[in-house]
Length: 310
Image (cartoon, rainbow, N blue to C red):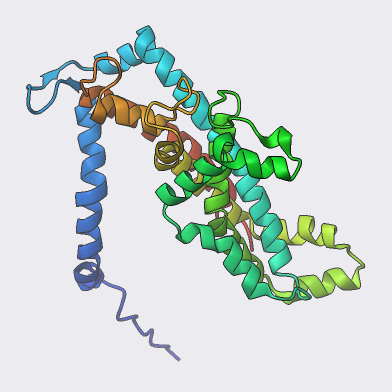
């Protein structure tokens, strides 16, 4: 007896034409605001000058100057090293504490769960300029010194943001404090989606909470962990506002908090001291290098973490 196969009406030659009207707005938005600026930045990195004074094609000269001329190379490698440290601090503190808080928040015996979730996520809703300015006051010994001395915490009375050895760490920790709510929220959602069957089996086997975390929770949230690592990597290599709010665009003191984002702003938009004349081509070269650095970090992380958890 022959069995007649029913065709899926959504699959066929008309599928693309059917979905195109729905995809068109998002596709247009992506091309105009993401793809075209990216391609334009790659093109601009091969030129020097500005639209007002006229541009001239220089090929890879901007990249050569960035890595060979001392006034460019010193600033770039300094900003690159600071950005890497900025990222590592976020990975260790922000995401490490994010996993810890998410584990505690998903505990069955935790009381006032909604209150703790609100407290952790509240800094995310605040403007970076506001939190940066408030923390700048708190870390200023002129403002916080008398209060700390009354608490006999004199060892905390020091110019944290004025010391080149502590400024970047302080800025990084403030950024971790503000954005920790996002990884916590994502980790909580991932852990809540883990089936209770795993935990019941682990309880029958006599597994301890630490063993449950390492052998059940952590492997099953690996895709989310990879995605958070990628978001942290991309956001940190584009960080600008927190340094602008707490220090300045020159990465004070003495470029100790200078990041790739602030360097790009000075080179391509505001103009590098002491000349003060912006060079969009050099700024585009920095952006182009950052794009390829992000690709080198994002693609292997995606391949290693996505699609393996069952």
